[in-house]
Amino acid sequence: MDFTAFKHSIFNIQSPFEFNEIALSLFRYQYKNNIIYNRFVDALGINESTIYHPEQIPFLPVSFFKTHRVVTGDFPEQLVFESSGTTGAETSKHFIVDADLYQRSFISGFELFYGDLSKYAVFALLPSYLERQNSSLVYMVERIMQKSNRQLGGFYLNELDELKNSLLEARDQGLKIILFGVTFALLDMAESFPVSIPDAVIIETGGMKGRRRELTRMELHETFCKAFGVEKVHSEYGMTELLSQAWSKGDGVFRCPPWMKILIADTNDPLTVLEEGRSGGINIIDLANVHSCAFIATQDLGRTFNDGTFEVLGRFDNSDIRGCSLLAI
Image (cartoon, rainbow, N blue to C red; front, side, top):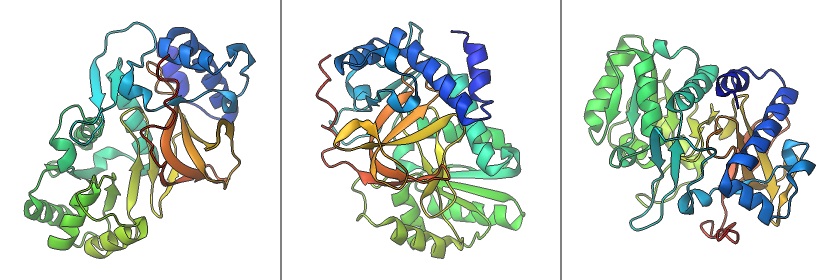
């Protein structure tokens, strides 16, 4: 595969037809060059030559990233991203062959939804991610900060009072503000150090991990809106196993960049794709995942809408064991 031409094509998709053609081409490439994905497709009894639409493509359960080295081709990795997990729990590992491709994906996607990063002061309250190594989220936000090219901004661990003062300084200078925050840390700040930054973009990245009582999205966002004086709370939908992200500008409704697509699978028949409005398992096509697997069945539940947006409704019960019956291949 000509990777230079491929990267150019995925970031210049102009139509659903182009997306479908590239997705099918990538499926055939990964079927032939990804041992794990090849064995998974074969174990399902699916003939690769009968696939002629992305909805027919088999989606690899995301749990495979915990138990297998999911790579396409034979290339040395530049980075290894690792998921968070409770003590002793098995974590996912994503072997990154092309760090520049990842950076192009998240920078292009972010600027597609939020505009030129150089015009923002970017702050990040991500204590649980900063406390461990190999976080794809920290890697992404760090490079977004570099792209922002501002004197103000940066990562904060537990220095909530310092963060509040810096946010006020950026506000008083008339700067556009982005604040990334893990959920429990934003709650801590909302309760102890509320700050009026009504024009800021607050991006919740998820993550309670047993640190706080679980709240509904509506409860969380009401709390954040009151504490920070904003009308909406934004969200990011991504994961260790992806190189692209979907973004929500409020109300939990997400939109993908043109090189990423969400399909909803029947929970009782994972090979059946459901129509818009029906809830089921979230399957993701991430064309930037050329060196691992671009077709991933997540452990999340959701539904799509006819305008191309989607929402996340929760997770499968016993999600760690679902989809694992073929793990021995």
